[in-house]
Image (cartoon, one colour):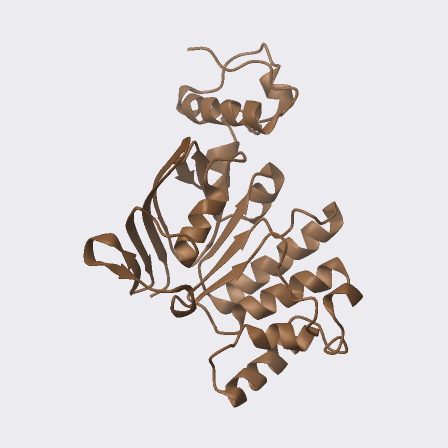
Amino acid sequence: MSGLAVALRKGLPGFDLDIAWSIGEELSVLFGPSGSGKSLTLRMIAGLVRPDAGLVIAGERVLFDSSESVDLPPEQRSLGYVFQDLALFPHMTVLENIRYGGHGLPREVREERAAAMIERFRLSGLERRRPAEISGGQKQRVAFARALLRRPGALLLDEPFSALDAALRREMGALLREVQREFGLPVVLVTHDVAEATALADTVILCAGGRVVHQGAPREIFVCGEGLPASSPSLCASSGPLPPSSCLMKMKACFHFCERIRFAHCRSSPSE
């Protein structure tokens, strides 16, 4: 059974993270302003940072459980991870970068899967090129292929589209949706981009100050009863009737995020 369940605590100087959420076989977005603990959460799930306490379960596998002294190293967690800078090895070719994702697999299996990934991610003809010799979109596809080579139990993405232009972001977003459906695994995407979260997410996990404020469908998070985005500048400046009371709490959270994400036109918040 696919799914990812997380309950983690981590104290750092000037910051305390205490979060809990669970998702199924879906594309979920960790959304919130910079400094809300999104990337830190991914690193703890992947085993790159050790939590102070908590639990991480992927499918039926316990990856971390502080109460039982379980702490699997990253290479044993069977999780795909795409970093913000993609972390492709500049001295390796496209094919070698993808093969690296199968480190530890039998050679025959690694070669077979790498060849399949080359075809699946439309990289044929680029196998011998190095990252500096391919486009931004092609680099993205190489990073996805490498992360998926071991057929992970979940895919973790730390703002992988942040350096792309709008057209390429849309193309890579569509590819991500295809990947999630085809491989049938939980995907967690970190972003603080409202449009990206709305377009891609099945579920949005709204974060602020190291806590989960709300979890739900994008429409529940970003859209008020008037059918307008809760972070919309036009709504922020509106002096018209208030939206239905069921939207007020979510809107207040989003207005708080507007200020921190520097939405210049967010000048006021709903009153009681």
